Structures are given as structure tokens and as C-alpha cells.
Length: 142
Image (cartoon, helix red, strand yellow):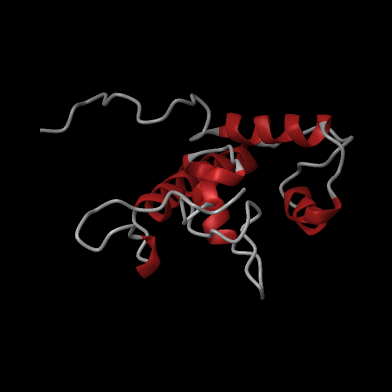
């Protein structure tokens, strides 16, 4: 039987509500712009999140952003723990999976593209990175 008030499944109190967007606004407002993600700033501007401008969503936009935070968090959970890449399995006879889907480098680059899916999964689960976390060969020099 489902509990009427289930325990939270996240360490954050703000990842499913408008506070997610307020936290994002706080970061955008306090950090210098990063030219590598220049176009993403335009996506955020469409939501009312711009450096140097107040973030004051009206009731309609607040409802949209609340729903987006819930759906986005659920989608990241599904993608993070429901991956089906064949090379994610460490040993074929066990259920162990590699934490990092890309092992080329800590920036999730392939020879042809940046793997946003692998990057998103990593940062949803782990947040931090070191070169040793991306090794597939224990004898490989760092």
C-alpha cells in the first residue's frame, strides 16, 4: 500500500519546485558567463533567467516552471538509472555498471561529438569527477 506522505527520495528540498529555478538564477547571477554554454543562456533567458536582471515569474510562469522541474527531475532519474547502452556493463555475468558512460575524458567528449546524455547522467548521479573515475583499465597511467 502506498504511503499518503512517502519519504523524500532526494537530498535536495528544491529539485521538484520553483526553488530549483531560483537556485539556477542565483548561480547564473553570481557566476561569470561561460562561452562554452553561450546558447544555453538564451534558453534560460526565454524563461526569465538572465544575468543582471531580476527573476520574477508571474503565477502562470511559476506553474509552468514547477511542472517542468518535476518532469525534468523524473526524466533524469529514468535516464540515470534505466540506461541501456551495451557497454555500460562491467562484467557480462554480473549487474555492475560503469559509473561514467564515457571513458575518453572527464568532459564526455567522443571523437565526433560531446555526449550530453552521458554528461547529464553523470552529474545527476555524481556531481564531481576525477581522472581515475573514467579509467577502464586499472593498469592505465593517469
